[in-house]
Image 1 (cartoon, rainbow, N blue to C red):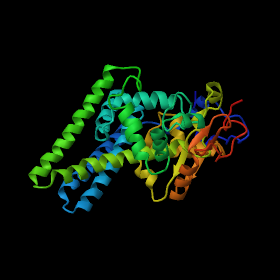
Image 2: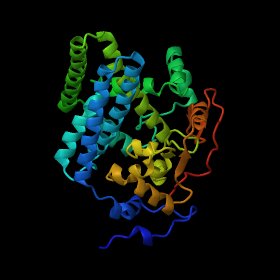
Image 3: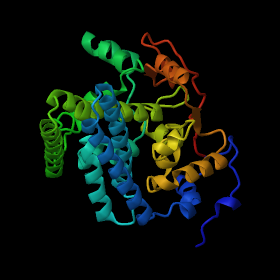
Image 4: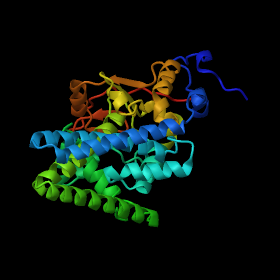
Length: 369
């Protein structure tokens, strides 16, 4: 059976039923082939950048220059993580075992346990995006849930959703609670693989800290300064980066959350629950196109080096259905101001007092026939 070619497709009117996901994915098949050579070049390139940046945190003499190098290292850790994210989806190269090996390797600088990320992200988040009771990534509380929280937890929620603390949210609620040796409460299913990956990233962290300590000793520098600039700064910058990315992917006044699984399924939420955030100055390219997020949720097998073309195709075919946002700090903090809690009955965002701050849709954005 021949596949439909992108140039022959006709856009779907906004008031027409949304085609089934399988149909939409078939549109992208001609442009989603995986290229192992290209993938390996991207991995090697980012590993070289990582080695240079983290070495600079030792070589540079000025403290502020070392700290800036630490921030750059954190950004490159984010780039490596995005490559690992694709590998975890089996979309980076054509080879399953190679993807798994690459994923574990490039996840090490971010201290991310591969198998736990796979379970929480690939299985839960992608399987039940923006469905209450399932998806836990930046899930908004209802007014009743928020008011039932202890005072300290309400203060923490206000900090998380202030716009200033995505790093703290990811560090505490995502990495510490759900990925680094999670308790049975956070991860009821316990597997040996989870423990092995936790031990692996622990060893990676010990080697990282140990190497920096030896480098500081060999160059007669303050061990504390080298650890702050070469370990703490990169790790915190990475947490801020990933916390910001997952926040803006699924938090927007036009993004819908669901509590009814049947309604959620009919809405085909892979289109209505995520944002294509656009940047100037090729920031999206520097982020390996992870911000072309609608295409990624439609089909996780689309490799990152094809996402830009796949996203453009979706936006051409589904005009008026995909949430597209040009980034600005004004927009970001306005979103943080408005998107505090969620009213699942009205399907709208509210502030911490329960006052609606977004328009309640009359029907799910992408309901099928």
